[in-house]
Amino acid sequence: MAGHSKWANIQHRKGKQDKLRSKMFSKLSKEITVAAKMGDPDPDKNPRLRLAVKAAKAVSMPKDVIDRAIKKSSGGDAADYTEIRYEGYGVNGIAIIVEAMTDNLNRTASNVRSYFSKCGGNLGQTGSVSHGFDRVGEITYPASAGSADDVMMAALEAGADDVESDDEGHWIYCQVENLSEVSDALEKALGESTESKIIFRPQTRTEVDLETAQKLMRLIDMLEEDDDVQTVTHNFDMSDEVAAQLG
Image (cartoon, rainbow, N blue to C red; front, side, top):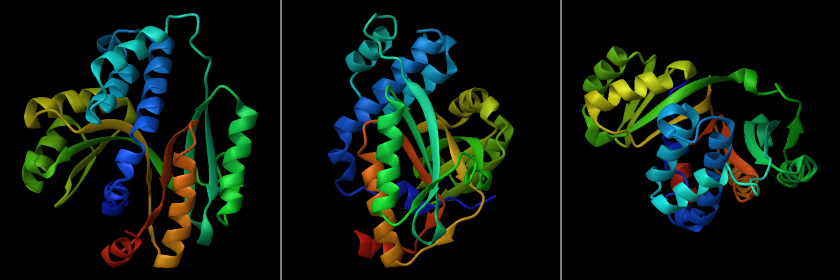
């Protein structure tokens, strides 16, 4: 399995999260509404909704905003969103997966295609890059949760498959269908996690230089600023020196 990418988790720390906070709330609210509409409006009875609410709380979304998003699922004004995945390549053949939720497929497809084109990449067919990723559950803990050995032991006992630890924290991976069970078991052993979600985890990563990183980050920024885009996943990594120059 590919190692955890430190850059993937510290990127945008300096100011970017604040800049995108309102968009983040909007995207999370949409996921909460869709999750509640597709299943039970009670998070305890709806694993997807439970994960969405947990993600919202992790970024300090107010409780009343979360409650409104859930209530919206049963209202007549709730939009019908379609979930769709786009796959393509950035510069130098870097694989990128875009997960979107939209009420207008033509608009979203046109926008995503234009972002790839403007940044020297190209949009591919569904399945063109996802074969290089594993669909897994990811549970994140801060470094203060314990030593790498202690977290590894707790994760294995909880039924996880893999753990990556560094001075930033711990990332625990498990089968998608086991995410709720593993997350609950870890909570008893380590306390509440920072985040629990289903991700595409790259099987291998490609380290890039500064020029390539700049072009790739321009594409990722454009994608993440689109209201229809929920997540952007890639398979590149960079050295601490390149990350520092990138800012």
